[in-house]
Length: 347
Ligand SMILES: *Cc1c(COP(=O)(O)O)cnc(C)c1O
Image 1: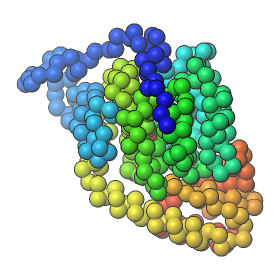
Image 2 (image 1 turned 180 degrees about the vertical axis):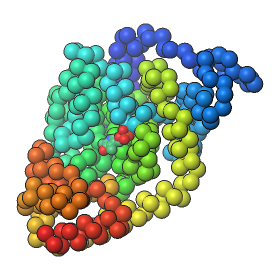
Image 3 (image 1 turned 120 degrees about the vertical axis):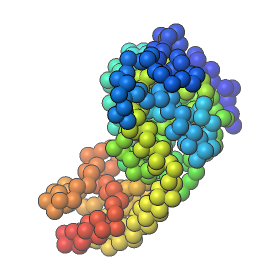
Image 4 (image 1 turned 90 degrees about the vertical axis):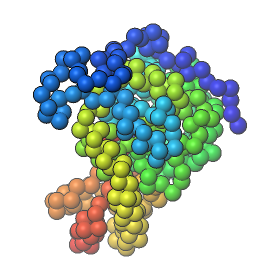
């Protein structure tokens, strides 16, 4: 089931469509040269005296090979948080347009919209934590510019049903942005395979979770060349710094390290899922496609305080809609998880 292709240009704010982007020295001169006196840089070598590649081609080349997506359909941001912010600023006219989120979900969609003075319409997930397709399509109108789908979802840990996502891609009149921050930990495939089937599809991934590089702040966006073009026009010219590009390249060249850590975390998640139900205060563990577990306990605040006193910090989600009674446990190293389990044993 597919609708007529959405004309993305028509969804973009008119000032962004008209925008003449900043043209940096490094993006204007593309040839080969020995002496660069064009960017007012300091000529003395520090290893970092030159501006970084504004379009990060070396990093994108590796990502392209790993994800099987052409480089022209990839852009990078200063964390996914910058990607979210830029998407809202590209598509949403403050005071006029809105985004749709599906609580309980990641908090940054709301915060970025609030900062941009863009309204958020919330359509809560259904019991079972799947999107309410009918509810979403009922709320949607020509001012619904972005639907944020977080799959696997934070904090509920589940993936969205691919059939449900396809129904939304076909029926939603605006951009469908799928946040796949946790996709590496999921039992189902990325929605990247649908990239060329829907002109309104945007997929976000990050180096912060499975790649173990939250400190470098690097987020990925995959979309049509048209959307990537707008993204590159609006982003700050040097939004991904040189140190970040180097660290990412190094990680991408050593995929085995990534794969090994991923396997360990998946195994540790399994161990926690097996052992946690043995404690009487654990009422439910929600199935997880992510590197964390949403766990319902009988006294979340009491347990939270107890763990904190032992130097173990977990996330209290007990006051979040549909997560009543729940704490969120990130999967740690085998050693950390053992300390956690021992502490729970003694509770
Ligand atoms: C952790 C997380 C991210 C990552 O954001 P970065 O800015 O790339 O660190 C994105 N989306 C969700 C849902 C997350 O939980």
